[in-house]
Image (cartoon, rainbow, N blue to C red):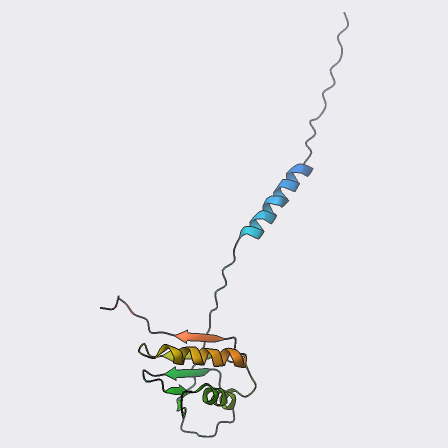
Length: 142
């Protein structure tokens, strides 16, 4: 009786389907992941000075609204709180630059429409870097 020689073949693993699955998983995770965009804004607030005619453009604009609705742009009081007055003051302070950060500081007792008006003027003028400043509190209000 003659026995046949069994030829042992090396196992052959096809990695093509495995690579396809890994790429599909990679694409799935890339598409389904939400990337959180945090805007970290470093602003150097301009110092108050006694000079009336400023020829340089400030690093930022700071709009302060007190509890009665009076507006101050970079420590200069505006004549009134109307939108056209605020727009003229911003044009005088910033010129044609719209990349300057605009910081809005409003008193907690400020009527809401003054804040909305100032945000609307900033949006109409093309300011995209608007931040609203708040005070940090350690506890809950009583």
